[in-house]
Picture 1 (cartoon, rainbow, N blue to C red):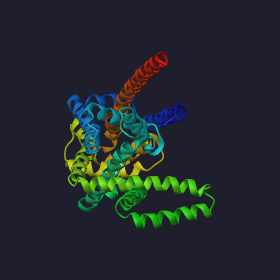
Picture 2 (picture 1 turned 30 degrees about the horizontal axis):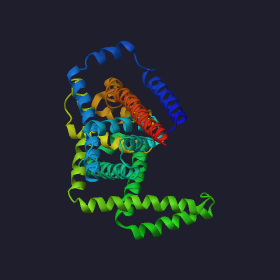
Picture 3 (picture 1 turned 45 degrees about the horizontal axis):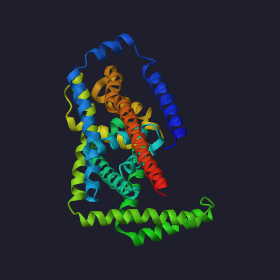
Picture 4 (picture 1 turned 180 degrees about the horizontal axis):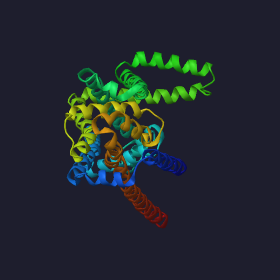
Length: 357
């Protein structure tokens, strides 16, 4: 991602954060808010941060497994660095569009071909979306009453987010395992876009599409050659998303509340995440906080739901935004040093060859 886009994304994120906190706190008594936050048990906050570390670390483990199957034996700390980079860049770009390209870039700095990095991110995305959809479906089947707590607005966002995720997942699986059908479908869509003059250069778009389809076919080949890989990735992703969705329940415990089961709060967070994930907002800031207040008022009550969203999002987003920014800075410095070292060795070799000549 370019430096200009970084700045734009960062400014937009800060603006959204400012508006969000203003809306949340404008009718709050700061003394009452301080009293409520003073009730929070620090041990549960630490537990929530641990769950977020599991969330980021699970993606790193998936990356290590996939790249290992592709012949790249990278240390786990490198893979963890890629995951933190993805968390940070996804958080400051609309719809999390910048995270995966940034991760692939840093993988290439560690001698991983861009094609393998792309394949890694594609498999992780497929597993994430499949697991998130299954989580939402299971939640709605065993707790249909949760829809009432979401309200009409969040219910519509849930339909939109679920529809987008379902379409993306179906498209990815079709590209991987039904290449002939995918070629006909994408060719028809591309032809329509060209006739509507949305696509200006059809041949260039077709070439790019063919490269993308080749990457998806490579993903299918990788899965067929390693039949245990996909179940392992899905199992890790279940742990990953369960860790993320469990943060509100940990916050619920931190306030000393009881009466609702973990699965009720976990299921509500799963639906809230799906409802806001497709919105073109950096980090889904604003929509997530507003949705939390609406969906979790049932569990925390009107008096504690605002302090609860501050603690929950503080754990699951804002604290790790800072941590991931620091890790990304470290990755950038490390990458620059590696580039300087490579240039130094290359320059030394060129000078030696020039002297010999």
